[in-house]
Length: 286
Picture 1: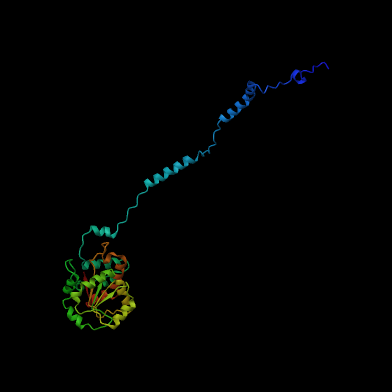
Picture 2: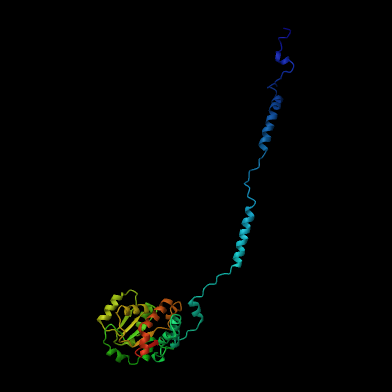
């Protein structure tokens, strides 16, 4: 009971904790100072962002593959553009076709699959060839030169399903062009289109069967089909003209187009070569 009542016991007791006076500004600063400093330090501290590590072995591998591909491209020879027929023909001068050209074509086609004896049977005699076009004639003037007795042949021809003259072209458009150009030559003779474009083969067979036709102008494929289906007879045939020298927009001739060349040779093989060898048929290269 010796303690005084004026001072609280917790203030006078040794080891007690004294609280600062909240009214004192300096005490407030001292009290708030340390915690604020910690907050500032914490906010000012920057943490490095986590970067995704690239595998150390990927980049060298990619570089090796790229360099390998580059070496292969450089080492690989470049493919040369294949020369087209039009490229070759544009550099070569135009030469009129000759009987030797046709015979060479037949030998090249049959040479690998025919014996010597068979090749001899395919040989065309010189006597069967008409004078070749020297590139100075129009088609009408050429026909007048090679067939001076056309008027007589035209009047004497009365056989149906047959023609006196066959003109073989590479396309339907070329056929139409030649049909227009022979007006002065044909006279009263009747000319028939023998190509497949817009014309059914049955219609052509009916026309041949009902009327007398003097000249047939067509493509080798359709003419061959007419013969095979017994729509066209070769008994009255005297002249076969190959439109040999004419070139299309790509500078290709009749024999430069693989499909047309094949069909032309097959048409000649059917009966025309035999007729030439027998002397009943004449061949002309326009």
